[in-house]
Amino acid sequence: MAIPSKGRLVEPVMSLLNYVGIKPQSMDDRALVLPTSWRSLSLIRIRPEDIPSVVESNSAIMGITGLDYVVENGASVNVVERLGFGRGRIVIAVPSGSGISSIDEIKDGFRLATKYVNITSAYFSKLGRRVRIVRISGSAEVMPLLNVADGIVDVMSTGTTLRLHGLKPIGVIMESEAVLVTPRELNGDEREFVDKFLILMRGALASNGRKLILMNVPEEDLAAVLKVLPAMEGPTVADVASGKPMKEVISVVPEESIPDLLPLLKRAGAKDILVLSIEKVIP
Image (cartoon, rainbow, N blue to C red; front, side, top):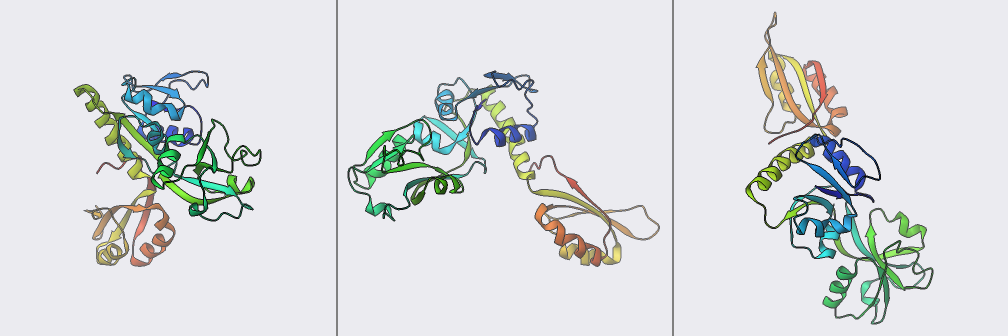
């Protein structure tokens, strides 16, 4: 599997792999290939922009990178899953004092510094605008300050970096997030391996932001408790070996609901409430 060696996706990708149960056997920053706790899987650490090409060539049967890099590269790969993290927007930004407030005000010959050369070129071609693209590989934000460009095309998450450099976004070209990609063609064993990873990965992602809640409920209070208790498909209710009629109720609930939910459950009659972390949810 090809994973980013640098940038904003490194930490969330490693966290995802850890959730799935894939743990590197070493974490030497100089190592490009890392064996993992899955004997048949190694991690290849490369630049995120190179991952689509590596996967396209079948040198890796899976890769995690940004959708923006997949589109920019133009590689023939399958985007099999959007991962819900590493979100950002590819924006056009100009100096705050430029007097330009929309893309419509960008004229032919306008200079745009970017590493997203293909995305930028395709976007302005559709608009019928002939801008000058200044290809860069480092930070774009400083280019207008150096008078290398009149504006930039770059990824924006919060906009803080743009503001610090006196820039403002005036338009969005595309939305991006981390994606899992595979080659267009996989043999039977490769497909089986990818499917196994997908089941575990989706289970790990589905568990994010959810808690398992268990409680004992007197039988006469069961209806009141079930009325306030959220669940995925429906709560599990089982008999409890007790001196009086008692039920055990089990459910999976959104983590953010816990502070408001616990007092409601207590008032409805629930007792001995346990709130537990979930490792994976396999639908």
